[in-house]
Image (cartoon, rainbow, N blue to C red; front, side, top):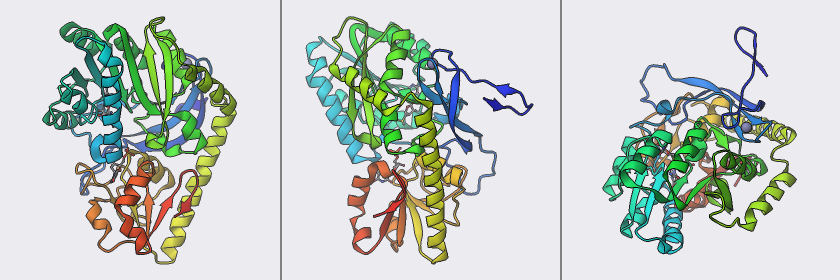
Length: 416
Ligand code: SAM
Ligand code: TMP
Ligand code: ZN
């Protein structure tokens, strides 16, 4: 329990089941993680308290405070899935798997994607001539998807918009979503929408960062405004059951530092894969629903923050040239929580056009195109996009070849 400004104890309740939340981590005041600004823009940024708790009843790990959805996702939302070739490949393979697998057995299938962004997955579905609809409130990203031939409705998926799609397009045989469902605080409305839109034998498949991997690797920077929930097999299974759906499969994925692909269906329509029980047992062994495990994770996160700041200060004292790589949403948490500014990291390189020549939220570190990384190379680079380490290190191989060192902080601070 927290004291609010009037000194009154504040209780937080689960957005899914109403149970009491037990707080385990607090990163303090944080900006909106994708609110990149012009360097000369006046302050007036939106800040909120970034803290997380676990529900004592259904085990759902979630934030205590909610940033309104329109503040995070709007026409200018800069994130583009296709900045990573590995993610593009992942989505092409995923779509291909659906087309050759469960969709091949359906007559004239209809596919809906929640949070299609720039169309990375649906472009393959479109190329196969399969009827589809992407739903995404970020008009800028949706426009890129449309240029790839993808049908998009600029809207927030929820109970209301799902009913509207059902009325105009009919039931969906596959509802897919990646890295979006955990962003939607109104999970109840989303699951009601899925229930309305899904065909009788349809499936709802979604991928998201997995709390099991986050805890195992102390990947605490996966906690930021957009990641409202940190999902597990146990919490998703409980939430699904509450809204008339059944978790029938769960598959671990290597993307984004460790994700999980959940498959939900109407009860009794699909057999449940053995992986569900296996992962539930694994989560039990890992203590993922225990407050003590999550508090240990929070202590480890604080230690890593301290180690990173100490290293950056030492390097500055030695006159070393250090820059950042990847102006990720994740980096907002670490930069702002650790108080890292341009004194320690003068700029961050990022390939996303919509982030370049702006400054990062809160910390106000300039974002520059990757070309500025090479001219001249720094001595050290903090890899904030550590989930794309292989791809970025391969692309920037000349940096290491001429003596440059990468600084990583997951699972602990180390130099490679
Ligand atoms: N699916 C892509 C991927 O995995 O790379 C994009 C993920 S991005 C982190 C989250 C996307 O969800 C954004 O494009 C955002 O605009 C979209 N989004 C946010 N709320 C949404 C909602 N209620 N319905 C549909 N899309 C939503
Ligand atoms: P993500 O961790 O949310 O996927 O964000 C990755 C960020 O890193 C995104 O802003 C794009 C950037 N990036 C590069 O600058 N170069 C690259 O090669 C890749 C893969 C990503
Ligand atoms: Zn709950």
